[in-house]
Structure formats: structure tokens, C-alpha cells
Amino acid sequence: MSSSPQRTVVVTGSAGRLGRAACRELLARGWHVRAFDRCPSPAGESIVADLADAAAVAAVLQGADALVHLAATPDDDDFAARLLPDNLLGLHNVIEGAKAAAVPRVILASSGQVNFVQQYEGPWPIRVGDPLTPRGWYAITKVALEAAGQIHARVTGAAVISVRLGWCPRDRAHADELGASFHGPHCYLSPRDAGTFFAAAVEHPVPAGHHIVYATSRPAEIEMVDLEPTKKLLDWEPLDRWPEGATDDLPG
Image (cartoon, rainbow, N blue to C red; front, side, top):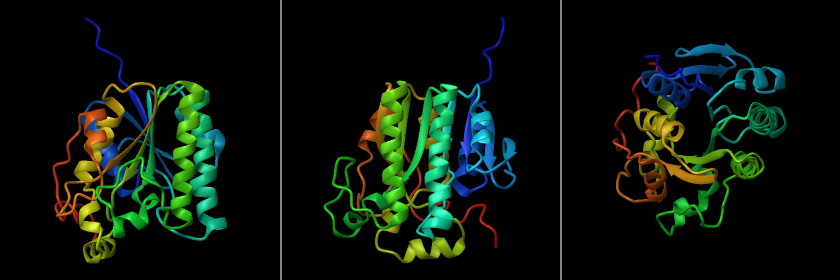
């Protein structure tokens, strides 16, 4: 009896903390992971390239069964030097590459910052249909990402999930900032929960079209975002609560 062919997933931003978590979980589940980043990735088939290189992006997506697009400048920064090439040009190249390669499942990393004001003022929980209140230009690039996902699903018939991710600290100073903030402990996303979320987003059967969901760990106290659509769409449940896992695998 022949075994089923190994499935291939492309993970952009694979050397970052969320990318490492996604790659680890997908590898553990038997996926062939093409790990795409500017620097070498510790897990998967490491491909060192830049999202601005449209040819490299198109090549890595050929034959892929799924795409997890995480690569971006992760917060407000110089617009022309960082946000424009990393978050918008990179998004364009990824979407066009996925379309050309007919990738059937696309997961796009949005951000809770698209509802920034509501995180502080309520009402809670924040629902995917609530009016957008982006924090700044970084969040505006994520609004554009969600719009691109909607168009891509409509044009190609692919299943596209735009996920408004919680706060997964990148280093110990970032973890301290999260712990000292009002909303951070209620919007925290642990590496373990991130890994299982991305695996579910890649593997679980979902209908064609564009889906917007939130992904956070269990809230410390306030149910700040509505996870019910996520649980219903992907049969996924977070396990951790701040600060569980917050400093795992961080240097120092």
C-alpha cells in the first residue's frame, strides 16, 4: 500500500517567534515546511530570501498546498523604508505568487491593532464585524492585508483566513511591556497556542472564501476578543493564559 504524499506548506517570516512556533508544530504533524525568511530558519527547509524578490516568492510557492504568511515589520516603523516594502510590497508578491501557483489554502497574519481603540474603551469582546479603529500605519497595512485576502478569495476561489493575532512577545523587554499594559494579558498569544492555531488553520476543512478570525490565548481576566468564530471554523481551543510560555525559548 502506498503512503500519502507529504504535504508542503510555505511559512514566511519563519525565523521570527511566531514563525518558529508554526514551523515546529507543522513539522511535528508531518508537513514539509518551506521556511522563508531573510535569515536562516531553525526548523524546516530554510530558504533565505526577501519578500521584495517577486521571483523568489513565486518559486517557493510552486507546488505548495498551503501558505502561512507571517513576514512583516511587526509594529509602527518608518513607512517608506520598512512598512511599504515589507508589509505592502511583500504582501503583493505573496498574494500574486499564491495566485499563480494556485495555492488552495492561504493564512494571512493580521493584527489586533486594527481594533486598537476598542481594546481600551470596549465594548468587549471585540467581534470581527466591529468598526475598525487602527492604531497607526502598521495597522493600516493589516487592514490592507485583510482586503487583499478578501479579493484573493473572490478571484481564485481559495480558502483564505485573515487572522487578527494576539500579542506574542518577541523578546524579554517586549514581554515586560505586555505585562505592564492594560490590554496585553487579555490579548496574549503564547507560542504553543500560536503553533496549534496555525496547524488548525492549515489542516482543518474550511469552506472556500475569506474568513476573518481572532487568535489569542485564554484571557487573563477580560474576554477582550471573541474567539467563538475561530473555535467554530477551525475546531481550535487555546490552552495557555498569560504568562504561560511567554519567555520560553527567548534569549537571555
